[in-house]
Length: 417
Picture 1 (tube, helix red, strand yellow):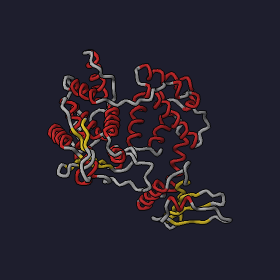
Picture 2 (tube, rainbow, N blue to C red):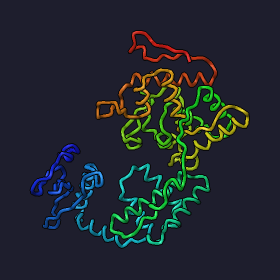
Picture 3 (cartoon, rainbow, N blue to C red):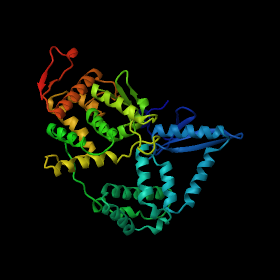
Picture 4 (tube, one colour):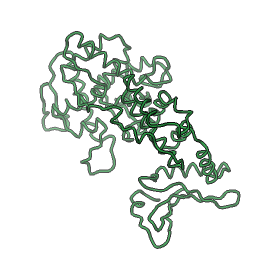
């Protein structure tokens, strides 16, 4: 069976040669050094070969090639020739001339994370509808620039950048498949659409007390208040909480296991729950009813809460504080995650424990395999101390932090915060 390391070490010879993989797939190494995945099969008594794709940075990965090979095997079992079907797809693609048709093919075939595909689909359906029925040659740089400006004017500069990016990639896809057309996005630079100031915002303990004091005064659902606190206590990303389902939460072991498919780095992650976090999950379970989602939509129990909900509330928290003359600058949901990291580092907790809680894979690690349970005892201890710290700050009472789990230390190292 092939590996990426083996593929990267293949060298051209004076003649073309093959290396086998699994499920009938193999690679052909050309005299030029090009490595191509292929699959041989028999169809109605004749032998056929499907060229799956070229390996490499500009081609496809070994993992994707194997998935395409399995898809081809299923077609063969159904009596359909995958090689002929590929040719039909190419013909259909070349016959499609509208931006919308090429966009649909791009959404279907382009490699991207499911969450990215869903986000881009949302932007496409909402903001690129006027382009859908236009021929590729009918969309000019000025049209795209005007479309992006319209999105910026409604206060969504980040979305405008995604509009430009989607157009650029759809045209790139069309050009790759034989269209002789200029890409209008090449003449619309990202800097001409919007500029962003890099944020490095972390709340202080005093701001945490102010923020959650204001949260209690804002008219909103109890689940939203609980959700914001969970993000602060667990330091998960907003998307990781918004799409969470109850099957991921083990109440008996006090652990929330997020599968690889939902993680930014595609690696499974355990979130060890403090007493406070576990109580919040119990409250959320009570509110969720029969929904599979931890935070279901207010209007559809079979869908997660809107991703914009938390942002609206954090904006309202800061605005309400400023109206009252309180020193709370605006902050985002992501700033809560950064707050946990910053303050835990300032108190003196082990940086590796913090990085594991954030689901960051340290570049200093010599191990190539990420262990999702690494530092479990230390992380459980640290997250409980963090929850106790936050609770103390919100209530305005002092708290002494133990930096090392007593079971692992000669004597607990403590610090008052």
